[in-house]
Image (cartoon, rainbow, N blue to C red; front, side, top):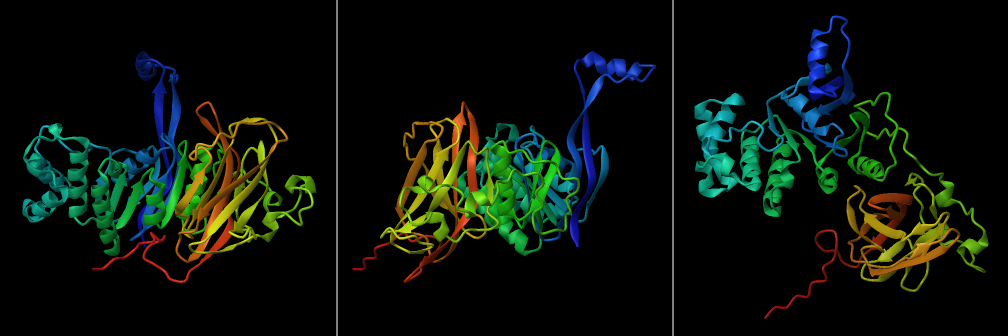
Length: 443
């Protein structure tokens, strides 16, 4: 059963070059248009199931907040259908639904009334809300005197205290400190266990992967894809890197696997096939290192190919190719990249993710303050990253890329997401995802 159903939703704003044009249009006998249509949302279709955590991501201006406002009824739609089944609590932009001249207490009761609760019901919830907000005596002060942190504390405390059927959160949690954010996410976990439907907009991609069951990517008001969170995060990163996808004619909301339309994907030969000449991987070598790796046939690979990985892989501390690493031992990630065009200060990277797509560790030459110089066309870089394996036993995925900056713009030349499968073996496991190598002393 669905908690939210959105069908063919479109929101159009009429933009006028000059204020007088609005008047001209309203009195025009010939019905001449003086405006142009701006599609804040264009034919959006998706469902959110009851009890599901649904994420919405996209760059600024993609239509995320507009979508949430229409779902909550704050904003009217131009056309389409939106059906919401259940009581909604929404934590939108700071200030929404609050009277700045009222005290915190007065705003609690006012918002409770707007949600459909009686005064007696809000009396029962008041202590819980005050305790969660934890803003002290400011609860008796006008909210116009609050800091942004106090404001979001009170707003979130009010939203979650009413045990809504649907909780909608738009970026607001990024305002609080780390302790408050932890408390909020813990409370969201509790609500989810109770069957509360959660729709969240955030730029915290780690939170999207950890808390969401499915995620949608919006771009320039268009619905690009709906699917598994970690795959949608990778698609979002493509958009950030300038790999703009083509809009889907239709995205089927019920499909669990991602539907990505128009993404720029390099040929699999760039990963799995030995297409380069022997000189590319060094004279008298037996075979490219990548031929000894467990390559993901569904690796997400793209870029402008001004630089290209011609070999890559992992070796153990003895220098042997390795897809199995023993925890506690050193290992080296090797990358061989050919410059197909001149690139200034190329950046070489690696990242290890878990099966859910959460980035666990990684680095790059820029973070390590390595001057890579000018990558002239035809130059081949041999890059090695050596470190100790501290992850717990399990299966992981290794990603690599070559990027650079042109001014303030990040350019992706060759990016390979989840290209190699790595297995970590252990003698003993600890709590969590990595071993802190704790030394215990008891006296």
